[in-house]
Every structure is written in C-alpha cells, then in structure tokens.
Image (cartoon, rainbow, N blue to C red; front, side):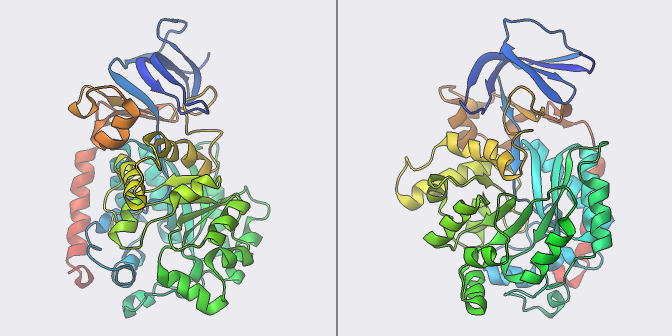
Length: 456
C-alpha cells in the first residue's frame, strides 16, 4: 500500500450494497480515495496513518442530491407563497441577471456546498448553470472538495410563465456557444488533476427545447466523453398543456420524438404524467429525480413514485433550490419523500425508510451514472462516506437505525464527511474553507442585492 490509509473503526456500517448488509462494530479501510476493505473491528489487519474511532456512530454512504440549484442560495426566501407560474415569472431568472457573474456564482456556490456537506451530501447535480457562471461554481466545488456535476443550461425558445418584461430578456436564449462549451468540457470533465467534477447537458425545460437544439447537442457530444442530459419534466399542468397544444403529444412522447429519452437522461419532478408516459420512461431506461419539498411548496402536485419504482425506473432524490425548498438538507427530503406517499395513498406500507435511503444513495449514484464509483460502501468504490453521532437524543433508542436516520434526525446529526478519501468535515468543522470569512463575504453580496429594486 503506497497511499495514506484512513481507518474508520468500531462503527455501525450501513453498506447499502445489493444485500443492504449492515456490519455492527465494523471497520472501513480507505487507501487514498478508495475503499480497500470492510471488516469486523476485531480483525486488525491494518495500521492507519489516521484512525477515527466510530464507537456509537453510524458509517454510511454519502448522500447524493440529484437536483440542486446551487446559486439560488443567494436568493433564499425570494419565492415564497407564489404559484409556479408566478414564481417563474417573478423570481426564477434572477440568477441570470447581467451582474450575476463568475465571482457571485463562486461565492453563492461556496455557501451552498457548505450547507450540503454539513447535512451529509457528498455529491450533487446542478441542473442548469449558465456559461458565464460555470467556472465559478466548478471552482467552488473544487475548493470545498465536494463531488459536483454541472449541467450547461440550454434553451432555444421561450416557455410559459415568462410575463415579466425584464425576465423575457433572459428567457429563451440559446446558450450553445460551441467554442465556449468545448473549453468548459475540456477544462472540467474527467481531468486527471480533479476527477470529482463532471459536465452535463441541461436543456432547462422540455417545452423550451426544440428538435433543432437536441440535434445540436448531439453534434457537440460526438467524439466527446458521454455526457448526461438532465431537464425539468412535466412539473406542472401548464408545462404539459403547452406541449400538448404545440405538438399534440404527451411530455414523454415529445421527449422521445426529439430523442431526449435514454439511459443517460435524468428527468426531474415528473408529476403531471399519464401511465403511457411512465411506461415510455421505463422502456427508455431514463432516470427520475423526486423533489418533494419543492413540489409541495410550489403547489405542483405529487409524483407517482411507487408506480415508477414498481416499473423498475431508477428514482433519485433532490432538494431543488433555495427559492423553492428552501433547504439543501437531504435527510429532511428523505423523510418527506416517504411520508407524502403514505399520506397521499392512505397506505403506510407503500414505501419504507430503507427504500428512500436507497434513493438518496445507490439510486442517486445510478441516476448520475456513477454507480460503479459511489453510492455504497463496497470494495473498490470511492470513499464518499458520512459519519453520524448517535449519542444525540434523536437517535435513541437504537432499535432501528435506518428508521431513525430517515424519520428522527436531521442534517445537524452529521459529524464527519469524507469525499474521495479526503476528510472534508470533522466534528462539524469544515477543513477546506473558512466559514466565518465566507459568511462575512456573503453579507456584502446580500447588501448589494438588497439595494436593487427587483429584490424589494
């Protein structure tokens, strides 16, 4: 063994492997960025460069936030008590303003990633990042050390709900600058110096993406590494109605028509769909992200998660953004994902804590095409691991730790976070950034925004 060895010993290990194996009094051995062994603590075969005693603690795969608008954190609280159409018209394009550049995106992303890490998220997908902000958010992820997937925002026609004249300037723009996109992909995707950043395609909404844009994306991706596609999909009745009126098709039929369905496609929300849509998604092996907080806060409805799971569709979980959630706490999101299905269907057996934890870990990894690297604690996978301190009251009694994790505690219970083998947070202290300095800088940005008329 040539690289540094980190040993997590004496813990309660939730492997989340295929068998959902749980190891009591287990030890996880990490060499460099990779998990090299998982043993009973009594089997002492390694000497570590650093050891963390995990007695009375849970060792769990890091949570995967499969849909999170990171820069929106600078506008938290700006979108309350609005219908979806009002929200789109009045708030959503704030992040596209001319003065929202790389510097502002970098600062906002740092704040967002701090919140994510402190609540147990080790990997995420931001579904729409503008070209002018891309380097900012990617540099922030690299600085913090979080595993980041960023989709380049694209659209070539205006969608519904854009009533504000100021917002019309920023809507319907085709951000398909081929030279700029190639530079971003070359700089950030799978580069040897930093394997934790990946680039995706991000057609914003199905109704703002034409076959012309879809074909251009396919031309660009030819000869490049395979890139994932993510988009907001059938989130509202208005979205479905626009597609129906223009093309006389359902959302999934139109997505199939412009060739946007497939194994590398991740569809978010997927609320206003018919049986045939769900089947087309299943047949194409497209994946789905469920964002329960956002869907309820905007009054969009309830996704048919049990039916999707029963048809073999991969379903991950996302928090969405700070203007429509307003939190990035994946543990809270897991709880909602379970409870709303039980309440809506009047059936407490329809989904379990184990299933939603699977959606936030292994299914999330599969949704991001990272299942061979992360999502479970197994030999050969990257060490994206979180440690919970179970001495807190919310963990007691300790009859069912998975139930406690999903229903009883929140992100503040996360004590230590390891990403790609690096200890990013230990005993609630971030090791990669100065939190106090960051929050002071955020206050300056807040004052600048609050002086502008559109935020009053």
